[in-house]
Length: 478
Ligand code: PHE
Image 1 (cartoon, rainbow, N blue to C red):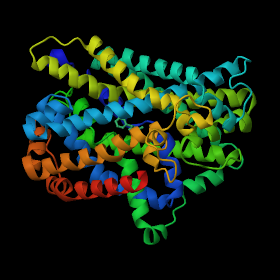
Image 2 (tube, rainbow, N blue to C red):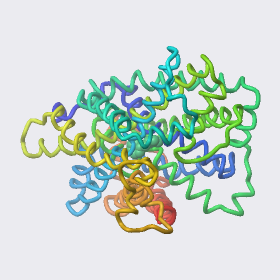
Image 3 (cartoon, rainbow, N blue to C red):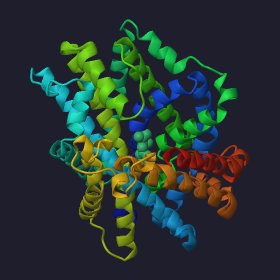
Image 4 (cartoon, rainbow, N blue to C red):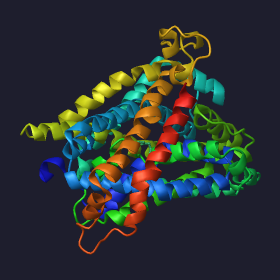
């Protein structure tokens, strides 16, 4: 079975793939702004505590279950007990919907990257339009959005169809070090710009008073960000864990991946916010930060050759981050189909299965590419937003204000926190933390330390925090 499913070729390769999954749009786009908004250094403190008490345990749980049962999300939960199979399906469905909108965003990143390349060579990369105007014009341009969305999905297919070692590992082993190197270049360049200091101040200076005045906001923001950023709760790490050999040390991996992800997030904050500050741009959340504000920073603020070069490097970096995450989402879906074939006694055809599932996801994601990210037909796009279809015209909840948020609500909003909570409850209360500790001990010379603390995490802390996230998401979306 191992040969049919594939395996990681090396620890380094696995780590690059897993860290690549974790480091994505969430780190570069969400983290810096959320940290600045929620008390800077104080937010970081809460975030780190959550990584330690929720992230480590959930990461370990997923990796251990995946390696123990040697299956993707559905197969793993089915092996634990038939009555849990639906949790696995929920994971695959989350991957399905996240990949749909993630790829539309990835396609947009590609468009911005190409725009800066064109400008390096003297062309006009953005139709001569400024940040907001170009954003409006591009997002309502159906053909353009569809084309870049299709290219991004095609790149995913090529990598995932190549297999675990020959596709995902091979790509991430090059992409992740490249991403880190570019990030360092951008951070250094930005640090040398006058006025950057304000950005660091916004991001990092701790405001501990927020922990007494608005602790719940900090907690829910940090917790939601943490588990999405670590790719937890939807079987991604179960799937990646299922390709791990018994010689791989789960105890160190459960720590290295979250720490590396957090370092990348902090580095992103050191690049993005000071860049906005140095070039007189307001920090804003949402699509605006990545596609309007930062576009202005490079295209107008820096301007000239250096602006184009830095703009290209920055969007290339974001593209690498997005693609190393999206392939892990696609792999969750592909692994499900592969496992099903193996179960039926058939030889799985990875290429065919990858193309099939990616094509279906692509179709489902089309509305995300066509509603102008919420502009709707009234705003010049070719498709209306979900609210219009449902006849809601006033007080539109975020869940239906655009197709992207609709898919995000289903996956990140509801299914992922639920999935993480249930996995933790299964480990803590049904099969027992010992099963995880035993799986760690399968590696010669390795023994899980702090089993008692892990047990408390699985039994109480992770479920409690995930319920907080679930409630907060439902409040935000509706
Ligand atoms: N962790 C990725 C990010 O930060 C998103 C992701 C979630 C990827 C779930 C895979 C699985 O952007």
